Every structure is written in C-alpha cells, then in structure tokens.
Amino acid sequence: MKSTSSLSLIAGVVALAAVTGFAALNVPDGSAPAEAKTSSRLPVERTSLLCPAPGLSDLSETAYTAYTPPNKGGGSGTAGTAELLASAKDGEKAHKPDEEDGKGEKDEKDKGKKGAGKDKPVVSLKEPGTPATGKASGADSPALVGTATGRLAPGWTAQQTTTVEAGDGRGLLGIGCTVPDTDFWFPAASTAKTREDYVHLTNPDDTAAVADIELYGPEGSLKSDVGEGITVPAGSGVRVLISTLTSKAVDDVTVHVTTRAGRVGAAVRTADDTTGSDWLAASAEPAGTVVLPGIPADATSVRLVAFAPGDDDADLRIKLVGKSGTITPAGHEELHVKSNMTAALDLKDLTRGEAGSLMLVPAEKSRATPVVAALRVVRGTGDKREVGYIPATGPVGARATVADNRAKASVLSLTAPAAAGTVEVTASAGSGGGTPVSKTYKIPAGTTLAVTPPVPAGLKGTYALTVETRSGGPVHAARTLTEKVNGIEMFTVQTLTDDRGTVEVPAARQDLSVLDD
Image (cartoon, rainbow, N blue to C red; front, side, top):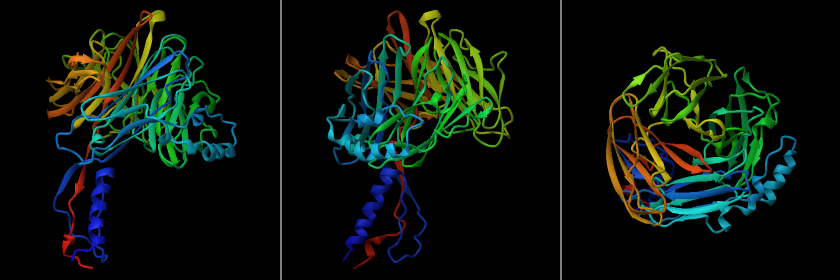
C-alpha cells in the first residue's frame, strides 16, 4: 500500500512550488533524486501586497482598487480570498533617530499584536475579472497589508491613488502596492531643504522586521548610524524622514533599503515646495541596460538620476525611444556614473511634445556595469507645476496589470526598445459595471506607442488594464493617470511588470507510488 507520508510529501512539494516558485523533492531513504525530465507552470496559490500609509495631509482622499485578471488556465480549485486590511496604526508614527531600541521592542510587543487580521477589510475582492474598491481619508490612514489566495492569487494587483488638493504636499499620488522583499533601490530621492521625502516600510508578517536605510549622494555614502536597525513591528509600518538620517542637504540621493531580519514593502513619498508630491517606486534590479517607459508628451522638465552599486564605474549612452524611432538627445549623449555615487542629468523638455521612453545602454557593449535609475518628471509651468516619477522597470513579460483607470484620464505607453512586439490590452469590467473589451497593438522595434487605452462598454466606476505579450518583444509599459484639480493637471505614472501569476514547478524526480510502509 502507498505510504501516507509519501503522499503528503508529494502534496507538500507541489504546494510549496505553487507559492514560492521552487521546490525540491528528495527520496525518503536519502538517496539522490533522478534528474527532472520535464516541468510545468502552475498558478500561484498565495500572493502578498503592501500599500504604504497614504500621506501626511488632512486634505487627502485615497482610493484603493484591487483586481485579479481572469486566469484562462483555471487556477486553483479553491475559491480563495483577496483582502487589503489596515495595519496596526500605532506603528505608523514617524521614526525618530534618537529613539531607544527598547522603545521599538515595546512597540512590537504591545502594538504589533493588533495586526491586520482583526479589522474589516478596506478592500475585499470577490471574483477575478471585476475590480473592487475602497477609500480612506485624512493623514492618519494606516498602511494596508493584503493577501490573496486560491483563484484570486494569480496576477492579483492593487493600486493606491491619493489626491491632495492643496498645500506643499498637493498632487495626485499613485503607486502600485508592492510585493514584500528584502532589497530596494530608490534613485531620485532628496534631502534638500525644499524637499520632504519619507521612506515608508510595511511589514506583512507576524514577527518584527529589522531594516537598514543607506543614502548615497554625488560624492558617495552619506554616513549615518541612525539609519541602521530600524524595527518595523509585526503587521505594521513605519515611516522615516530621510533628511533626519544625515546632516547634508543633497538634491539627488539614492536610497537603499535592506532588511537584516524579515521582509518589508518599501516606497518613498516625495514632497516639494513648488512641484507637489508623488510616490517614488523602487527601481528594477541593477542591470547593464535599463528602460524607463512613459515620459508624457507635455513634460516640461525631465531629470535623470542613476546609481552604480557595484565596484565599477558605469559609462552609459542615453537613448530616447520615441514615436518614430530611437535617437540620441543632442547635448545629452552620455552619462558617467561613478561607483557608489549618485549621478544626475537635467534633460529639460526632452520629449518636445512627443511621448517617449528613456533607455540607458552601456557605452561599450563589453563593459555592462549594472545600474539603477529613475526619472523625475515635471509637467506644467509656474505655480501649476506638478511632479511624477518613473523608475527603471522590466518588461511586461507574459502579463502585467495596472488598476484604477478612469475614462479619458489614462494614457498607456508601450515601448519595444530592441525588437518589434505585439501585445493584447484588455480593459476589465468596471468596479460598478461594464463589459470588458480588448485591443491588439503592434509596436515597431525601437519605438514608443502612446495610446488612449480601451474603455469597457457601459463603464461604471474604475477599471483595470491588463497587457499580455502575444509575440516579439520585450515590451515595457507605463500608465499615466491625470486629474485636473484647481486648474492644475495633476498626474502620476505607474510602470507595469510581469505579475508572476504562474511559477515553474519541476516534475517529480522519482515515482513515489511504489514506496510502501
């Protein structure tokens, strides 16, 4: 008869692979497993997302939208759940560099037990294909901790969009809620006196996380002991004003967040005296060639910030990928980035009325030094200027989704930097009603295609856009959302990356059905 323990082992391996993307199977007698001959891709069965605390203004209104695209492969047989819940509010107070470690430990013991699971969900998604929404108001709204399981997990995404109508922090602030991790890079932050930038850290787990924040300016590391060992209580979040981590006021700073214990979601909220505020999402992992998609056609100022985290300097050629092809901007041909130093370049009105994307490539193909990068983009003039950020991002891959789209307010940028690509863009049903619609786009090699995306028929509420690669590529994408408030064209840009809704699961390396008790 088949061993119960053997069958349990098989089930456990498959489940682990579906959640983590990796599993190894060893034979119970300790012998080496046979070489795997085949593998398959299965839908993930559990996904976590973290949304930072919205902001510091009593005038803010925040909209949350969660969405899971229909999974054509069927996904898990279980119905599953997908909820965004409020974190422990008391953990969201500002981190002060002079706080004693013991106080952080007390926060974890006394406050962390209030984790997300005991409150009513801010957003609860019921089924794939239809977005769910929620709202929050004011400065004291907490970070959200979310988990999706079963058939709601593959491709689950959530968008946080905050409108601040007035004040220094005014703006349309948008960010895709992040997957917890242990390493994040944020070029384009600042400790200048005109800026008030916070790092937001959110911990999804039931044990405390410990994070370190490093800052790098144009002359290298900005030394600071107070950025080390920051405790993030269980099921909660903290925010850190980065100007309190150093005595130097620096216009262009790269922020590096790592964890020495646990994992977090990380994001940087920027605020400027004259151009308002927005979220700065993490750059893609360091790479020799990076793409920053979706510069609006009417950008009046574009500033590039790059950082080389390794031991080698980086010499980069700057390429503008536009509607008609790829060019090298006159007067801005190259950027030299010294090792562990932040480099910045003012590209002014780079796009000149035509939407585009930026690509950084090695000046010498044989010397591809990994870098991270981001763009600080300004639209408007005078007291009607508004800021947004575009981090370097990977391609959409098999499928990528962005939520919280609104009729006549979204622009989708599709970039094929190397080879021509074809994608299918699907507008979901609306959160309050509407019929999904799809459209196919062909992007010639070396171009950026900026389009008004399809809108579901009979739309009520907001909707999601899902981009799927059909051929060619790779294709990079970004969505610009615009809202006119008090005469200011407020905007925010979110990049789209592969949702990793499926994972490759190795086949069992040995048939265990022959094993007996």
